[in-house]
Length: 124
Image (cartoon, rainbow, N blue to C red; front, top):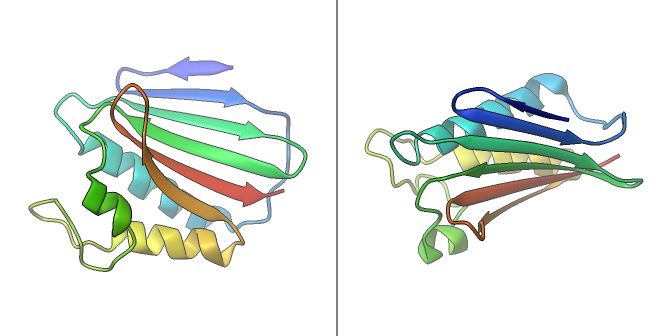
């Protein structure tokens, strides 16, 4: 299934699976990552994809911004490292911790089309 609003696109290619994570903290992570995507460039578009298989659920957030620098990819979860004028440098750190606390993995990369990609992998 695919849904699109003017600046966000949602693709759900999954069966109903239950994942063991606190919904409020997962919402905090998603809001932070989607907000980062929207702040990556003027007229940003964010694509959120959810996929599950037997053992895991992947949540992928991609934007059409400039992508991550090599330094950001290397130091992505260092506290207070920010490229934003008014950023605290804690959003990714907190998101990473929340995902890790739920036995998941949060990874940063650049998409093949350009733009940043954040992949959250959670066990089912």
